Each structure stands twice: as C-alpha cells, then as structure tokens.
Amino acid sequence: MRRVLVLQTGTTLPQVAARHGDFAAWFMRAAGLSRHDVEVARVDRGDPLPAANRFSAVLVTGSASMVTEREGWSEHTAEWLAAAVQTAAAPLLGVCYGHQLLAHGLGGRVDWNPRGRQIGTKRLATAPAATGDPLFSGIAEFRAQTTHQQSVVVPPSGAQVLAHSSLDPHQALRFGPRAWGFQFHPEFSAGIMAGYIRGRADRLAGEGVDPALLLRECGPAPRARSLLRRFVRLSREGQI
Image 1: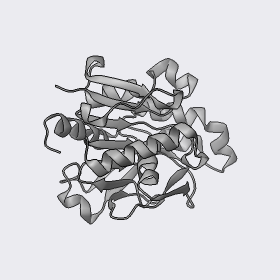
Image 2 (image 1 turned 120 degrees about the vertical axis):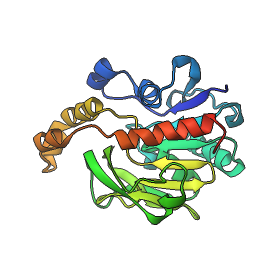
Image 3 (image 1 turned 90 degrees about the vertical axis):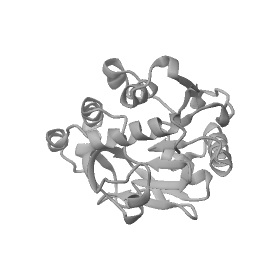
C-alpha cells in the first residue's frame, strides 16, 4: 500500500514537544499510522516536495507561522497544493495552517480572524453541505480542539462550507472532490490542547481570556479525531 505524505509546516512549543512529540507524530498516532506508513517532508526547512500521485493521501500540518507572512517555502507549498487539487493527484487534508494554505493557493483570502483568537475545546456544528460529504456524513455537532488567530476569511470559488463555530464560519471546507481543510485540530489530544493553553497562559490573560476556565473546559474530542481517521481510511482504500 502506498504511503501517506505528511507536509510538516512548523514545530510545536518546546514544552509540548518534550511531552508529546511533534506534529508529524501526532498525526500518525491520531490516524492510526505507523512510521513505515508515512513519509514526512519538512517543507518549512526546505525539504523538496515529491509528486503527490506517489501517495495514498497528503496531510498538511499546522504551524506557528502565518500564511499572510508569504514566506518563500509557504508560497511554494501553496502552489504545489493548488496543482495537486486541480489535478486530483491524491486526497488532501490541510489542518489549521494547512487548511489556510490550501485556501490561499486556490485563490481564497486568509487574514487575521476579525472575531479574535479561538483556543480550547470548542463545540462545532456542521453545515447543510456536510450531509452528502464522505467525511462528515452523519455528524451534526462535535467537539474539537482549536487554536488559531488567522482564518480563511474568504473561501476560494466553489469551496463548500462543511462546519463552523461561533468564532469561525469556515471551520471545515471542501475544496474539491478530493481536498478538504479543517481549521480545527483533529490530531490534538486533550493533553496537547492543555499544553497549548498553559504555554499561552500569559498571552491569553493579557487578552482578557481566563486560562483556568479554558483548562476546565478542555477534554477529549473523539468525533473530530474520527474525521481524520475516516479521511485516511477512505484514502487508503481508494474510496475518495
């Protein structure tokens, strides 16, 4: 069976990495993949982008970078992703930064979320288009781990909204027959989410947000994780 390509676009907070590992490891654990099932390209460090059609699926991670910074590696990756979507070379799923990068590459607009930062375990709702979607079919509401300041403020032409939250109307988008983006983090465990809240505690308090309350609300998000597993399973079985 062909491997899954993980495009890693950054690295986590040092204190989170010490306890939980880094982005690629989270995706492998959450999706039920072994190290032999995956090829990782650190695009933020200049790793070359392989041909997408060599893989059963492509996953794009989050990042501490901002899409609006227009870094060279990021713009190059956005172009690669857009070409992969347009040619349907492989099923793609972008998460957080990866979600935004897909939208940017396809002509959407990414910017600072006008509703402000979203962080913590939050309740999301699906949109009407989710009914016929192979990933979201049968899901009405679900909890998910979130942490972001930028968002897809204008989706690319033809994109379908699949899920939304009170602070972000574009929590999940379908960009094409084989391409999805999640602003939320299906690869996060509750422990990783708590690590981010603790790591950002001073900043959150300065923004008038109570980190202690966010930690009390923090908990498992199995439905969100099941969306990642479903994407990987359907991709590897050739059903999407």
